[in-house]
Image 1: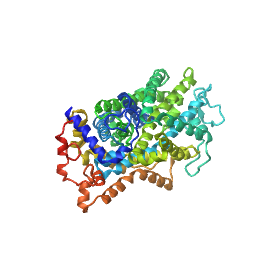
Image 2 (image 1 turned 180 degrees about the vertical axis):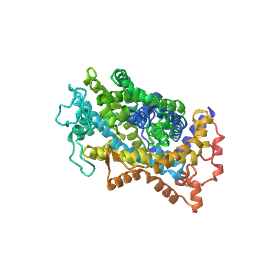
Image 3 (image 1 turned 120 degrees about the vertical axis):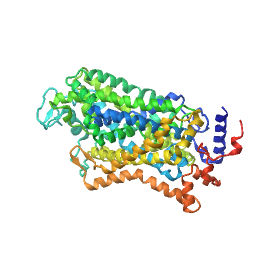
Image 4 (image 1 turned 135 degrees about the vertical axis):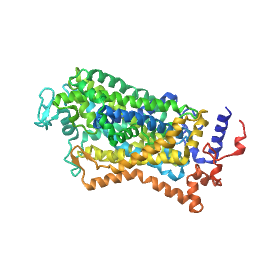
Length: 602
């Protein structure tokens, strides 16, 4: 109790010295920091975290990587990477966010001023991703509204958009160049895609209006901040499991389903000798849990100061992986049925990117009893999954703006609801190129250079900033200050050695084995690849810019500036005009030692 009371008093004194902390909104019942909203119930944060981690990537990215990596053998490195990297690094992010009571920008600026740009980069990558991630929700809405008819429009080849090489369950086409009715609906009806990025085509007004609807839905789900998000996640985080289980029960009864499931669970052990399989497993853990995006760090900043973070960490990470495995059974049973329909082996199916969601799944339930009902439930589930992930990506942007510019923004906008509206409106406008006929090529280009290239750099520098420069000792002491317990030896070893080593290997091989973006058989021209690198640099560039700015504003010689730049809270001390102690007298709690305060009892 004494430690807790000293912590509360320390926070109060710290707030008095830093007036920028008074710029928070006054919403709801507060805990240690008046002005910062908290979750009404802790279960709301857990469900929101699960909703953030569990998304469309579990439905298509995990099965696709598993499929490409030889099926069951992929599960071995995947589960190992979850244990030694996914869970420890998620724990690290949640500790820092809850302790600092700030989003990623200001939390990392406090922890390691030299790498404060990592926080800005996480916000940038989250915002970039939310501009095109909502396109998947838009497609889901298109399919949802198209499902209110019987027969389903992708159920047969008797449509104006179908080509002679179309095949379905009624009119099978044994040609090696055939494509299913669901593939042609996706490509030629919904997208009406052009031949490449060189041809922009026209605006697809149906998709434009649905994109607007998607952003309106998102806005009304989160415009009140964590108070409204906490209510919505009770439904959006739980409903998808009902649908996945229902689909699994139905899929296992389809012809060929067992062959697909066998491909999923029977390992091809030779694949474990390929380094790319291990890299894919590690990359999937990062993409799925969201390490490096800053979303969960922002959400944890709204926790009660003494919340038991380990329970949340285990709940989020384990639920995320179990969902991926459940989705694996669902999708591979659908693979088996699709291979039976096309009369080819499971290993020869042509699947790529979001086609798993909008081609394979619809093809699987097209012949189910009451097919339109299954279609409606499935695409409504996709809407829930997409909205959950979007909550976090938009919230991290709004949280960072409030943390940094809360006072001026509130004088101009008056209410946080208007700030969220501004963020959503900007993202909507940036998403318009995706609803043109060239949209699928724009989407694939942005996803390749954001979700693969940028994320690996961000994750590396985040681990360097927190585990390396802020230090495992400080992080452990922060946790003890909040919960009374230090992390066990397993987490400390993972933070200090295992995670930095693995993320370095991943980054190196991401660079060495880098392949330009492509979509199916289409290879992007050099000028489009150049735009892709500009998109990647839009987030990465903040890391060196942040370091240069820190070294510029700190006083003293270059050596003194460098020492201060890796000293926690150095920038805050500079703004307050405090003197800098030697690094040796920085306390293990990550704050400057204040002896008179430490001896004081409340």
